Amino acid sequence: GVRVCFDYVRGRQRWAFPTGGAIKSTAAVAGDTVYVTSWDGKLYGLRGATGEKRLEFAATAPSMSSPAAHGDAVFFGSDDGVLRAVNRNGSLAWAFPTQGPISSSPTVLQESALLAFGSRDRHLYLLDLATGDSRQEIELGGPISSVPAAVGDSLFVNDDAGTLYAFRSLGAAGN
Image (cartoon, rainbow, N blue to C red; front, top):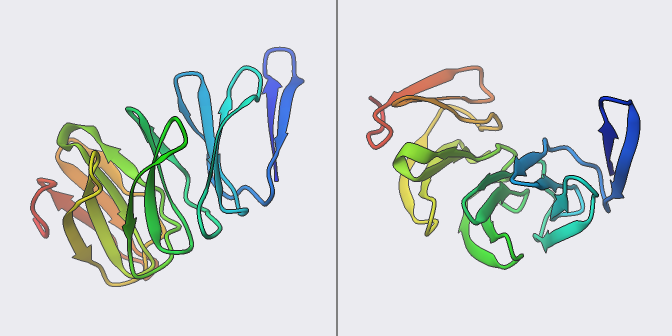
């Protein structure tokens, strides 16, 4: 896949960066860096203005999970069922294994310092942002590929079986 950046005022291409596979994720931007995952199993961090590669981290499987950037880390899941936190210097901060592939993109819940994401193993996971420790695992009715959405003290996520779930008070399941 090739990620292309255009000068949207003038309609001209600014830069292009080829990856080793299809890009099925949405880019995340933090500061002046754009992060994207690729089907080649890598997380890339590129300087937004020039396309210069700042970070390349290889997972063990392809990724369709869009990355989320927060603080000094970038979070993404992959088809090997692992959610990873990668430091902006390219080193692995922590990894959290699930029992199924992860196509759900992680959502940072800033007020509670948690990371929410779903897995094809039918679980919604809430992890500690800093350590990757599990704070809560909630089994839903079907595999999860959607991106959890948070508003105030509510968290919304749907499963692939066609059910939308709403949770209140992010620390307590089923509320």
